[in-house]
Length: 168
Image 1 (tube, rainbow, N blue to C red):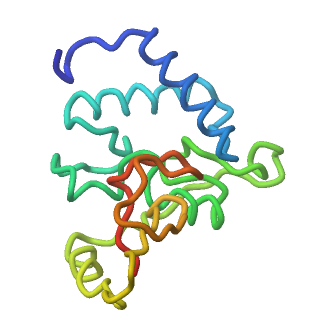
Image 2 (cartoon, one colour):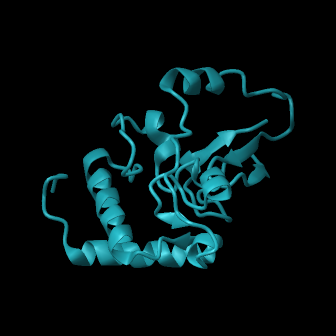
């Protein structure tokens, strides 16, 4: 099956329900506009089939996982966007203030750095390379752990180990 094959409503509903459960378990909320949210979920499925990973449906993916790791849903920019604007860039995730209508949903500016900026930022991160164990940081939620390898799944936000970076 390729990305142009029909995506069933059952596929969309199944992923949507799983995202709701995962979001609630981690203290997050999905957009209450179910039709809008399910359209985004459908696009995540398209990207999963096309690229092999669920990149953000509102950003242009390169098709290379290592280049797009920061925009795999939930992206690295979700929490800063939620804090500042009340929603992530694509508005799949929203804050409690949005849910309670205490804040209006507005457009969210792109905060993803250019490829050149991302490459430059990626160099020189190993500041204290002589520690007993490396410190790993989840790029989605900021969770830190000191161990040989990053955990398979972040215990806080459930991001996979590819979403961790060596912090120290």
